[in-house]
Amino acid sequence: MAYDYEYFKKEIMALTTIDLNSYKEKQMKRRIDTLISKHKIVGYDKYVQLLKTDKERFDEFVNYLTINVSEFYRNPDQWQLLDKNIIPELISKFGKNLKIWSAACSTGDEPYSLVMALSRHIPLNQIKIYATDIDKQVIEKAKIGLYSEKSIVAVPDDLKQKYFTKVGPSYQISNEIKSRVEFQQHNLLKDTYPTGVNMIVCRNVLIYFTEEAKDEVFVKFQKALAPQGILFIGSTEQIINHRDMGYERKNSFFYEKKV
Image 1 (cartoon, rainbow, N blue to C red):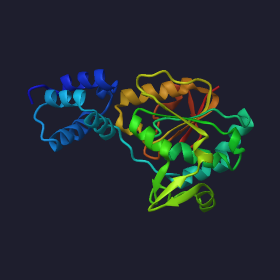
Image 2: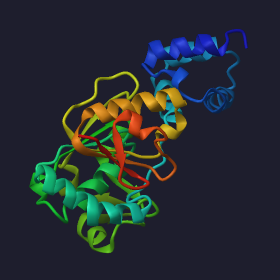
Image 3: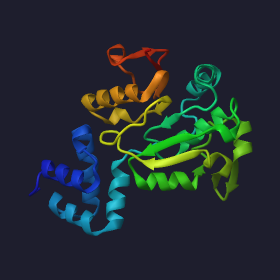
Image 4: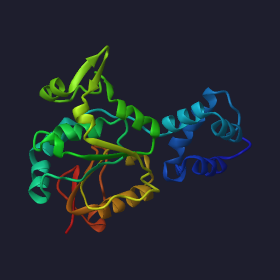
């Protein structure tokens, strides 16, 4: 192609604030090349021009670029541990007005799962989840709160009956749950992090980042947490040098900020 991938990365950074240098290049470049080919465009420069002039193609690109694979109560055994051990510990340490951040929240499955899990321990009107994602489109989907049957299969039956209504082939989550989540756009590699957070949930997202970018985010998470705050990561992830970053490992997926 006439214009190389380095040029493309710079243009995308200027257009979207997404830094493609922080993603595994071979994997990401393959995804982008596939999308360009789909539109029968020749050259990164022509594709950049299309993104600048066609809002629909621009939105499609951002949605395609960001990885949005999510479901409610993903890896249920980890959610059982959260319910039985982690949430009671957090309440005993910080009280019931917990500050919780669902980072890279995708289509809302995770923050809504958190609200439901917390509702077993805390009155709904005391729950507030701060949920962020880089992709505006998935945030809009999250706010609508309409999900496939497959997406909610792992939700405990009592919560499913209480908080979901069948709409055609889909399931609508209740306004009671939706109202407890505040969604905002946020770039983990660029934007300011909140502080004094009691728990951060960021699962199965950083696997797409380079090791350097991953470490940078884990360090920022540690700074964002209150002392003894908890970081909940995905089943495909681990923090190799967690002690150097100021974490104690509680078990495979939960890390506590050292005092």
